[in-house]
Image (cartoon, rainbow, N blue to C red; front, side):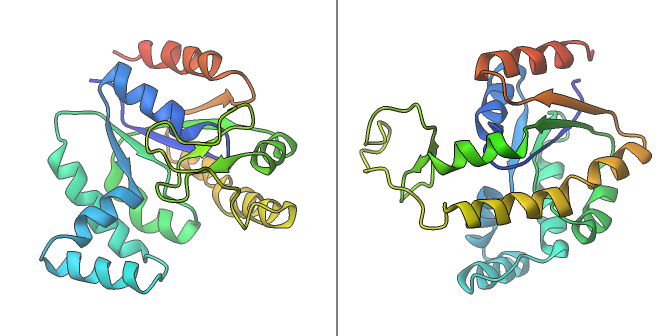
Length: 209
């Protein structure tokens, strides 16, 4: 079976697109924190009620809640490799969550800060689904939903730099910790085209039996 993957990135490195392509070609189960939290919140369980209260109050989801949601997902996918769309964003979260993940490899979509800023400054999003579209997308409508695309209010130069710096300061240093703990790290140049990036990912995943 293919190894579990922890996908890590800074904003606009193509993470969502690459995650979907990995799932489609290699049969991974995709763990997206937002989706799973919303699903749990719909259940009439103690965890579901706690998560619903947190989401409704727009509060920061504590690490122990993420741990419990992830544990349930892992228990449901014991025979399928899992792609964890990175939701470990800090040392605090990692201390709680990493021990339950078992063996995994890390795929780091590396993107220079200047390129990320340029991409984010010119993207547009679907205001309902929050799906993002790159600068070279020529149309004003999301073809999947029919919704008119907008520029996010916080996609200012100052806001973008702040979000990217947070990832650089809090999330990327975890790569060294995971390496110290014995996890293999793969650095992928995310400045390349979507197809070139996925070709690199496909090659490395094909090397695992």
